[in-house]
Image (cartoon, rainbow, N blue to C red; front, side):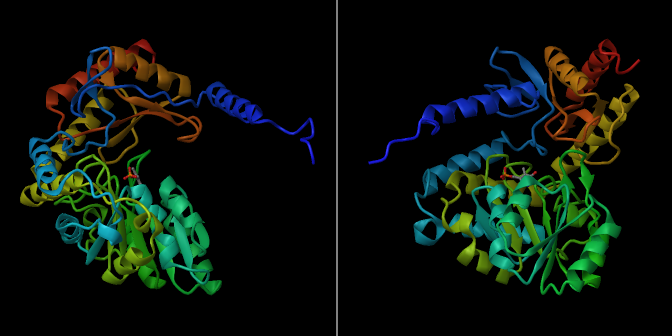
Length: 407
Ligand SMILES: *Cc1c(COP(=O)(O)O)cnc(C)c1O
């Protein structure tokens, strides 16, 4: 019989190790505190101490998170289709409304078929490995979302990265992949990058990928529902609607804000994902209430562009007004507006003071954004009225003056 050597770590050592890790995160100033709100998501939210604050940090781009028609559709689906399916799709988890939503998303986004997932994180996590193998290559923008990076890690294809939004480097990587003898090549990018609101140059990327016989895939989480004249997304905005091979997206941002994700594209792609994509095969069906509500969202967006038009007008107004108040922003047109503070401590102080003044907006700093690029990032919504935005700009101006950020 052997006994444990005295220096063998105990299970208590494991928990002490975790405590040290947590302490390290706190000391590095990277600990993420979660603020508790007690109301639905909206232009104004209620904090736990009962204060109402203007909300500038939700992905509620179209204001659908608490829209009456969306709520009613969720209730109706609960009544007609129950609370949950208690199953994955291929056993007994597919209802008529799931198939209907998949078809409706394909129609909205200009593709052939769609596969639903529990989250866009799963859509990206289960996308690459079933479609591409060792002989293939994936070329990824270096700032792509974490879920894309993880999904690519699970895949055997050779990996290339191009410098963020750099078309010359993308082409260099494509040439390199071709010279290395890659069979199928997939270029994958966020349609919109969430930290800067940068919109991928899909017109150029499509042209370059065509020239090298490569497929193009995009993640439209910060675009579906409002980018482009009819809200179809970045492909519409850049004039390449109907020309993107694979699109992933979320139901958890502009398209209602609950949860759920999808991949949409050619029918062969979707059919193979249904056979082989692990987060689809081994995870529960999207809840019927979310599916019913998502159908109502598409009804709303196909009937009228009023919401995305209002979002666009709000964004234009806010971008102009915040600059007039003396702040520097990352230029662009997206409702993600990074208000540059540069200094990490000041960004946190600005966010804290804004909350006291009734405005909820979060600071971002290294390592989420590059050093000396700290900012308060706001996200404009169609649910904001002009008075909310005016009040928010006034609060920024006051807090900015107090902190010596603006005159
Ligand atoms: C939010 C986001 C995701 C994850 O979406 P979920 O549906 O919440 O999992 C994936 N990709 C991008 C680019 C995102 O912004």
